Image 1 (cartoon, one colour):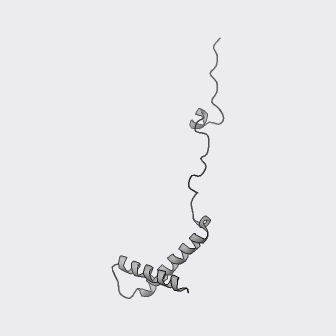
Image 2 (image 1 turned 90 degrees about the vertical axis):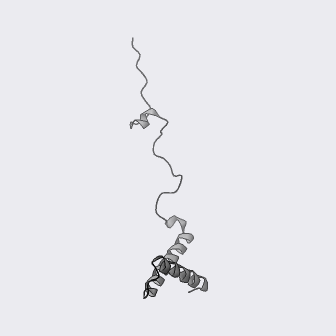
Length: 84
């Protein structure tokens, strides 16, 4: 394990320990949770596409400028009929 990761994991484990009220006897559990979180962050940083959810600013379905689309129909709104 790299020294940088070791330090990140140690700090994260300490943060977890403090958040949980500094319980005794949970060092191994906190270390494992911290190691898992650091590993997940590294994977996410290496491959941003691995994150869940749609990309920000993704496409919007339909054309909301079209009145028929706003009403749930398809295509353009029908033209008014001429009375004659």
